[in-house]
Length: 258
Length: 343
Image (cartoon, rainbow over all chains, first blue to last red; front, top):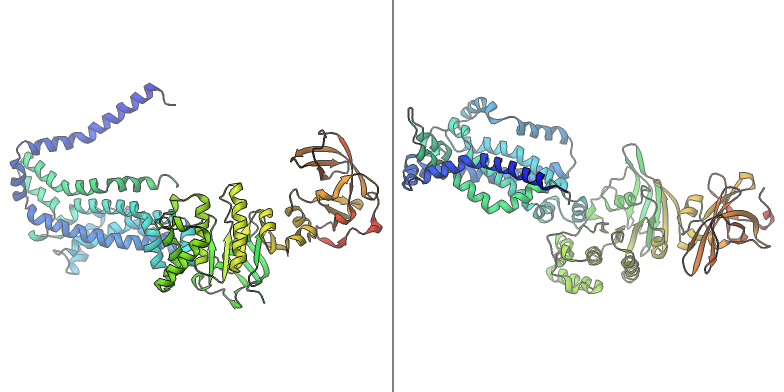
């Protein structure tokens, strides 16, 4: 039994951290809303018409490609025994642990040699690669949590590995898959460095780069910057709100055995 | 020629031999029960037959065909799992139909079989429900139905009743027995419960530490256990084992063959009451003999005995089984000419 003083203290601490987390967001919202005209000005100055289109295209491609590959790779790692399984899995973990910043320079030269810089591929391929490392790790954990007898029953029922995955196992993993989708979506949407380095063509730039326009050499228009930030963040917030129930369930599914 | 055969089958997990040189034939239409304590290899043997565990040595055959290298789906076996393993997101109907669809049966045939199975098992009203909306007993019947709808050559059951409460278990046991006799599918049933084994099995195979100890009808196992292990495992309370003739021999005797001393019995054996279990119709009495062994006797009605009270017992000669000191049964029951006091 937690006594009353402890409870008050806990709420106090949580409250303090909530304020610390929320304060900048509230401030940005406040600044951007100071003049509703900010948004249309920011939309034009930030080139969001074009940039949003690029962002949507790149992000959907990454989410679909990385999501599918992660499901397939996670299924293999989680449910099948094969030679080199351990070594390969550690390789995936390396992909998860090495930050993109560490590899971006050689990556740039590689992609340039392949003639892919200044194309959408330069944004999609590296981001998909990084996401597959996480996605595989994530989906493997889900597949490991599925009762083995379920898969064995399907095998005896004459189901192939492929139909066992899609018909028997994956329908149970909707929270896990949706959580993965939200995370990959968010990371890809917010990716800044890759887009900054790999493309110079105006038409290919993504939304986060638009924010750079508001940072002048000497002056920064804070109200417009705030409005731009809100514009860029909105799609992520919308996706999250739609999927949050699944998202939280997916996050918790690793926590309790059930 | 058996419908199912293990011939010298071996399964190793690392250095542990989970199943040792198992040789066992199951006849067409027979209900064979594999029984043993946990870790005896009974479930592993079943999974080898299903194709869920590889066979490390020897052969496993179904319908005269060696299936060591045949994938589970092509062995024509169906299995009822201990946790039922029903597909949670599918309705009962889809659970029953899943295996039939994977085998590309005609739509009308699938419908016919699903309905027939549902009727046999009384699942008609549940066809549109999902597994989590069913009671444990209903889930168990769906699992059985899913296996039977496929009309497999061999039906495997891995402790299918262990998740049910006691009353339901007895009822489900009778239902499985009746159903198996009706459809006549060769069935291998794994359990750790010797009573379940005796009541269900046409024959029972007793396993211990990966080794097959004895195969026989329930009567044979009860009356003529081939060794001390089987004697102690089959029957409740277990066969009492006591040293005889200066330790040169072990005697096994069941409670119904241990009686208060009178002329014509083997004995006498003196001891003190160690425990009294009044079961209503009869009373089980455990007695620690002065020779150091524990005997259990069953007395009719309510015996008025106190713990520590002295008791003189004798053994019914026809009910005594002889074992050599290593635990294996000697060839015959206790011969008349050896009747006499403890040597």
